Image (cartoon, rainbow, N blue to C red; front, side, top):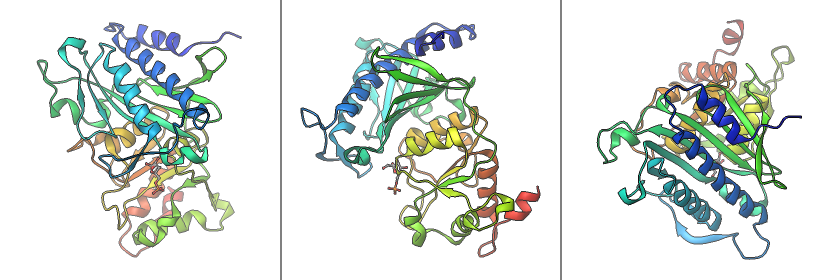
Length: 345
Ligand code: P6P
C-alpha cells in the first residue's frame, strides 16, 4: 500500500497554492522534527534521567511548570526559531513572545503554541499534546506588533496538534481539509493515517468537567441536564467522556463527534482555555472538518484577542451539538433551553 509521508502531503498541498515559496513546507517540517523529539521524551519519560515532575517554577498562567513543559517549550522555540520561516513565537508558557533576531533571518510567519497541553497528566500516563497555530505577519517592516500577534482566528494560515499517547498522531489543516498522520517509531516518520477527517454532524458524547457543576450558571446546568435526560428517541442520554487533557478530548471529538465544553464559571468568569494557544487553532481545525466552535454565543474564528493570553469559554465539536448548546445558553435566565424546539428545527 502506498504510504504518504507528512512532508509529501504538505508539498502536495502547497503545489495547489500558486504563490507558494516553500517556506510553509519548511516551517511544517521543523514543527514535525520538534514533535518527534518531544514524542521520544514523553514516551521515555520516567525511564532513565528524571524528566518527570515539576521544575518548581510557576508560568505566566499561574500553573506549576512540569519539566516536560519546559523541555517542549525550549525544543519548539529553538527549532522553529532557527527555521528562517518565523519572525515571532508566542507560547502559552511565556509572558511575552520570542522575537526572532535579525541575525537568525526571521521569516514571514507568526507561530503560536501550547507546547505541552495537559502536562499535569504526564505522571499518570494520560495522553498530552502540542497545539499550534500559524499566521502571516501583517505589519510592514521588521518589527513585530500587536497587528501581527492579535489577529482574528479566521486569519490563521494553518493550525494543528500532536497528541502523544499510545501512538503519536499529527493532525493539521491549512484550510483545505483536515489530515492525520501517525508516527511509525521504527522509521521515525509520520504517515497519512486519517485522510480528510470530518466531524460527524451530530454526536452522542459530551465532554465537560462536571466537578465544576456547583460553579456553573443555570443555563449551563440546564444544558448538561438535557444531555443526560433519558430520552432515547432523541438520542439521549449522551455518554460522558472527560480525559482532562484538551488535545485528547478534542481528538476524540474530531473522530467520534459530540461536544467538548469548557464554560465560564464562578472561578473563571472569562473561561479557562486560551484563545491564541487552544481555542483558535482547534476551532480552525473543527470548522475545516465540518464542525463548529464558539464561546457559547460567538464564533471563535470571528474573535481577535486583546492580549495573547486572553481566555474564553469553549464549546467545540459536531455542528448540531454546538448549535444545541448555544440555544440553551441563550435561553432566558432560569428558562429551560430549547432542546425540543432545537430538535424540531
Ligand atoms: P480542568 C489542562 O490543564 C487544560 O489546560 C486542558 O488540557 C484541559 O482541557 C483543561 O485544562 C482541564 O481543566 O479544570 O478540568 O482540570
